[in-house]
Length: 486
Image (cartoon, rainbow, N blue to C red; front, side, top):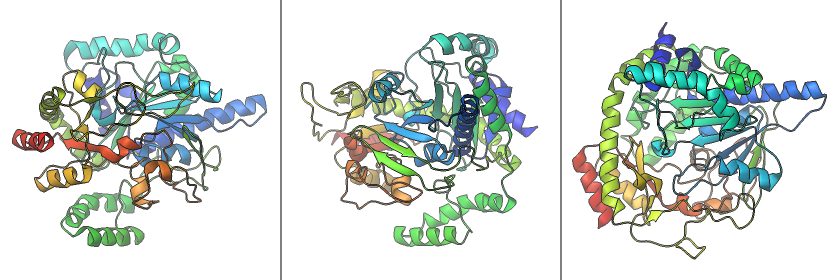
């Protein structure tokens, strides 16, 4: 079967087992299935104790895409946003879980660690799926060693560790997650259609939590076929998007909104699984809390991957090695050019008392964000040889101008995460342009899509981040470096 072929590819690539991979229509449905499983288990436990507990809490970051957060709300869960490590642009796991427990006196049911821009932290990295090391070494580690690591290592038995690999396709972290979500897209690791995902369930999860392992696998297996009309619309999207990109921005936005309202176009970023009822949103001085009020066992479907899409992805995956090599080469050019001449953004978190408090990027000995005319790079992206980053992050004083200039020269510079919960803020619940991300976080909304939420004091990141393109010719990369240095 085609599905087993895609699962086999991921298994060989990562040294895991094909039966642990689940292809889906989009990554958001992977997160939705995981959220539904957490809700299922919570309901079962509540029935056993004859009391209704609060919805399970998922700890994640606002420095991410809305599609990695909204599905948990659609599953009826509580979402808590925490600050990222400015040096990695990801949650500082497992410290963030410990800090959250100290602050709230509670433990989250799950934590989502995003491999932002494709950065895999240092450590014993998994094999890339080639040769004896893949079929024997990594597979053996996954099927046998993971149970002990789960119960005794940095991953607590009561916590589901979810890895978001939207930017690191078919690459697993050095500490294996319980569940790893991988996705395709023309702006991601492998330039393809915007659709397609694969979810890996660690076989060691069965030793850690048999009930949750069974619930997640059941939800990922009990998929629904995407309606034929939606498939036809989705297949037309790349052509529609290409046409819109040739039009003036205002006209393109108007036509796209009209096409979506009439149902003849679907934007993958906007078509997010909706909560059945309106969520309530609360904020504190340190984190943002969002809860959906829908039932504990929502009926939102999880869509399977159509065969036509899987055929496309299997063909595209033949180029993955070459794409990764090119991205790594360009990323290394950026790293070496910027490492010696520009001050890094350090890992340090400014924590004023126990718990999760504001994170600041500051000069040593101060607690205020510093102003720099030269670009700054998150420290982890400078410390070691570059990986095949989907884009290379820099923080600059003039991000909009830099993005426009790079795009004018033919490079697809990214404006990802210029607002918290990227895509949610810009496309669904827009805020006034003069309002900062932190100011917007203090508001509440009755919309099913809350306004941008981040009270972690990291407005500096949102205001200055730019993702430099990595799948480009070396000459264009040199031009971009020249722009940064002058």
